[in-house]
Image (cartoon, rainbow, N blue to C red; front, top):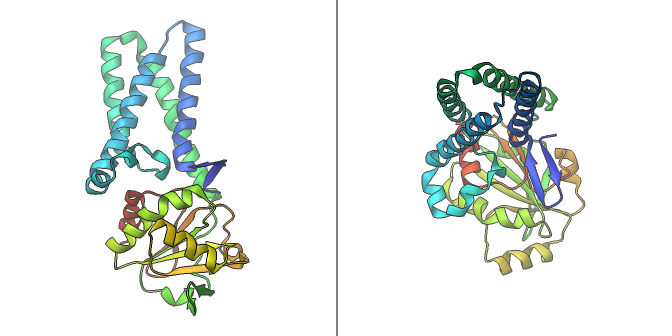
Length: 267
């Protein structure tokens, strides 16, 4: 499990983990307030706001050209686009300043922040432990849109981005232009767009209406490939390295910057 599906919204666990850690930190601050009467909540929220802004800002700066082309996408955090160490440094700096101004808050603020960081770290370890072993590219013969087949295992030797999608899926439709743009920008990688549960006429009609012409559109009309890949929610994007081993798995909508980040990590 790598995400939680909330109807039209899919949130990756790496986004939910820090939100859960924030709840733990606030519970610790609340407990300290009840016992000692010292309210570290406002200071903790300042740490959170600045930490969040710094983590997101560092990621945006890293992919600035991509976000300048589509500015509104920088507000969509579902791609998990954060630089954790930048956020941590900013939060600590704000926390030190808050404690300097109000020395009485040092202990409750430190306790709450430590509880949150431990919860975050624990969630990270749990997510890693629950992830299945990285599988290789399976030996699947996939039907090409327009005729012919593609042997998935034969893609070994180049990075592979395998996107499972459907025309009835709103986040699939929203991310398709970004994935098509990433395909054009990364000729070193193989992008495969595997439609699930629909026939060729439906897929061709959607692509024509949307004005999209991505290469390597494939069909899985009876969901046989989706079951083999262990995918039950859409969109899901699988990243395979040059050795043909799965390097990452993302359930939910991806931004262009998110794709760039994953491909950069596989170099």
